[in-house]
Image (tube, rainbow, N blue to C red; front, side, top):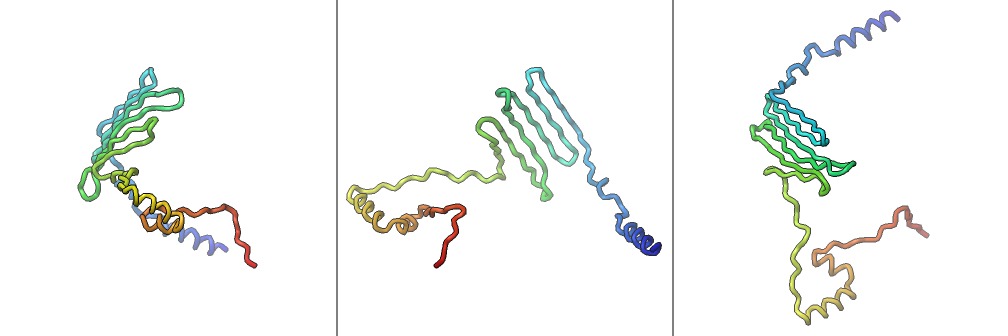
Length: 153
Protein backbone atom coordinates (compact mmCIF):
# COMPACT_ATOMS: atom_id res chain seq x y z
CA UNK A 1 0.00 0.00 0.00
CA UNK A 2 2.86 2.35 0.81
CA UNK A 3 4.31 1.65 -2.60
CA UNK A 4 1.01 2.76 -4.18
CA UNK A 5 1.04 6.08 -2.27
CA UNK A 6 4.66 6.63 -3.24
CA UNK A 7 3.78 6.02 -6.92
CA UNK A 8 0.89 8.50 -6.74
CA UNK A 9 3.06 11.20 -5.14
CA UNK A 10 5.77 10.57 -7.71
CA UNK A 11 3.26 10.84 -10.59
CA UNK A 12 1.84 14.11 -9.25
CA UNK A 13 5.32 15.56 -8.81
CA UNK A 14 6.26 14.57 -12.36
CA UNK A 15 3.08 16.13 -13.77
CA UNK A 16 3.63 19.59 -12.26
CA UNK A 17 5.19 22.11 -14.65
CA UNK A 18 8.78 22.98 -13.94
CA UNK A 19 8.50 26.62 -15.13
CA UNK A 20 5.81 29.15 -14.34
CA UNK A 21 4.85 30.32 -17.83
CA UNK A 22 2.29 32.91 -16.71
CA UNK A 23 4.99 35.26 -15.49
CA UNK A 24 5.95 35.89 -19.12
CA UNK A 25 2.41 37.08 -19.86
CA UNK A 26 2.37 39.90 -17.32
CA UNK A 27 1.79 43.21 -19.12
CA UNK A 28 2.52 46.55 -17.53
CA UNK A 29 -0.19 49.22 -17.47
CA UNK A 30 1.41 52.46 -18.66
CA UNK A 31 -1.51 54.81 -18.00
CA UNK A 32 -4.86 54.43 -16.24
CA UNK A 33 -7.55 56.99 -15.46
CA UNK A 34 -10.89 56.35 -13.72
CA UNK A 35 -13.35 59.16 -12.97
CA UNK A 36 -16.76 58.69 -11.35
CA UNK A 37 -18.80 61.88 -11.17
CA UNK A 38 -21.59 62.97 -8.82
CA UNK A 39 -24.14 62.80 -11.65
CA UNK A 40 -23.30 59.06 -12.01
CA UNK A 41 -21.44 59.59 -15.26
CA UNK A 42 -18.01 58.08 -15.65
CA UNK A 43 -14.89 58.09 -17.80
CA UNK A 44 -12.18 55.49 -17.74
CA UNK A 45 -9.19 54.72 -19.90
CA UNK A 46 -5.98 52.74 -19.85
CA UNK A 47 -3.02 51.94 -22.05
CA UNK A 48 -0.71 48.95 -21.71
CA UNK A 49 2.81 48.25 -22.90
CA UNK A 50 1.62 45.68 -25.47
CA UNK A 51 -0.30 48.32 -27.47
CA UNK A 52 -3.79 47.85 -26.04
CA UNK A 53 -5.64 51.09 -25.33
CA UNK A 54 -9.20 51.51 -24.08
CA UNK A 55 -11.33 54.54 -23.33
CA UNK A 56 -15.00 54.67 -22.40
CA UNK A 57 -17.48 57.17 -21.02
CA UNK A 58 -21.04 56.74 -19.85
CA UNK A 59 -23.99 58.93 -18.95
CA UNK A 60 -27.12 57.71 -17.16
CA UNK A 61 -30.19 57.80 -19.42
CA UNK A 62 -32.65 56.94 -16.68
CA UNK A 63 -32.64 54.90 -13.47
CA UNK A 64 -32.01 51.59 -15.24
CA UNK A 65 -29.73 52.32 -18.21
CA UNK A 66 -26.69 54.17 -19.46
CA UNK A 67 -25.64 55.68 -22.74
CA UNK A 68 -22.07 54.51 -23.29
CA UNK A 69 -19.49 55.34 -25.94
CA UNK A 70 -15.87 54.43 -26.30
CA UNK A 71 -13.12 52.88 -28.32
CA UNK A 72 -10.42 50.26 -28.00
CA UNK A 73 -7.45 49.32 -30.11
CA UNK A 74 -4.90 46.54 -30.07
CA UNK A 75 -2.06 45.26 -32.19
CA UNK A 76 -2.65 41.82 -33.64
CA UNK A 77 0.11 39.20 -33.91
CA UNK A 78 0.47 40.10 -37.61
CA UNK A 79 1.46 43.68 -36.63
CA UNK A 80 -1.77 45.38 -37.75
CA UNK A 81 -3.43 47.76 -35.27
CA UNK A 82 -7.19 47.28 -35.06
CA UNK A 83 -9.45 49.99 -33.67
CA UNK A 84 -13.12 49.66 -32.74
CA UNK A 85 -15.34 52.65 -31.93
CA UNK A 86 -18.61 51.76 -30.24
CA UNK A 87 -21.73 53.17 -28.66
CA UNK A 88 -24.46 51.53 -26.64
CA UNK A 89 -27.79 52.90 -25.54
CA UNK A 90 -31.40 52.81 -26.66
CA UNK A 91 -30.34 51.65 -30.13
CA UNK A 92 -28.31 48.75 -28.70
CA UNK A 93 -24.60 48.06 -29.10
CA UNK A 94 -23.17 49.47 -32.33
CA UNK A 95 -19.52 48.93 -33.22
CA UNK A 96 -17.60 50.40 -36.13
CA UNK A 97 -14.16 49.53 -37.41
CA UNK A 98 -12.39 49.27 -40.73
CA UNK A 99 -11.94 45.53 -40.22
CA UNK A 100 -15.56 44.82 -39.22
CA UNK A 101 -18.04 43.68 -41.87
CA UNK A 102 -20.75 46.11 -42.87
CA UNK A 103 -24.36 45.00 -42.53
CA UNK A 104 -26.19 43.59 -45.52
CA UNK A 105 -28.96 45.92 -46.72
CA UNK A 106 -32.38 44.80 -45.59
CA UNK A 107 -34.31 46.76 -48.22
CA UNK A 108 -33.87 45.79 -51.85
CA UNK A 109 -35.28 47.66 -54.85
CA UNK A 110 -38.48 46.21 -56.24
CA UNK A 111 -38.46 45.74 -60.01
CA UNK A 112 -41.15 47.60 -61.89
CA UNK A 113 -43.85 45.49 -63.54
CA UNK A 114 -46.07 46.59 -66.43
CA UNK A 115 -49.84 46.54 -65.82
CA UNK A 116 -50.52 43.54 -68.11
CA UNK A 117 -47.70 41.52 -66.58
CA UNK A 118 -48.98 42.21 -63.08
CA UNK A 119 -52.35 40.49 -63.73
CA UNK A 120 -50.66 37.48 -65.33
CA UNK A 121 -48.26 37.26 -62.40
CA UNK A 122 -51.12 37.14 -59.88
CA UNK A 123 -52.81 34.27 -61.75
CA UNK A 124 -49.57 32.31 -62.00
CA UNK A 125 -48.88 32.80 -58.30
CA UNK A 126 -52.23 31.31 -57.42
CA UNK A 127 -51.55 28.31 -59.66
CA UNK A 128 -47.90 27.70 -58.93
CA UNK A 129 -47.86 28.87 -55.29
CA UNK A 130 -44.54 28.35 -53.59
CA UNK A 131 -42.66 27.18 -56.71
CA UNK A 132 -42.71 30.64 -58.30
CA UNK A 133 -41.64 32.44 -55.14
CA UNK A 134 -38.70 30.06 -54.81
CA UNK A 135 -37.79 30.63 -58.46
CA UNK A 136 -37.91 34.42 -57.95
CA UNK A 137 -35.38 34.18 -55.13
CA UNK A 138 -37.90 34.86 -52.38
CA UNK A 139 -37.77 32.69 -49.27
CA UNK A 140 -40.25 29.86 -48.99
CA UNK A 141 -41.58 29.22 -45.51
CA UNK A 142 -42.91 25.96 -44.21
CA UNK A 143 -45.34 25.67 -41.38
CA UNK A 144 -43.74 23.82 -38.51
CA UNK A 145 -45.73 22.60 -35.55
CA UNK A 146 -43.58 22.12 -32.48
CA UNK A 147 -44.20 18.82 -30.79
CA UNK A 148 -45.99 17.35 -33.79
CA UNK A 149 -45.17 13.76 -34.58
CA UNK A 150 -46.33 12.25 -37.85
CA UNK A 151 -48.38 9.12 -37.53
CA UNK A 152 -47.84 6.33 -39.94
CA UNK A 153 -50.56 3.78 -40.73
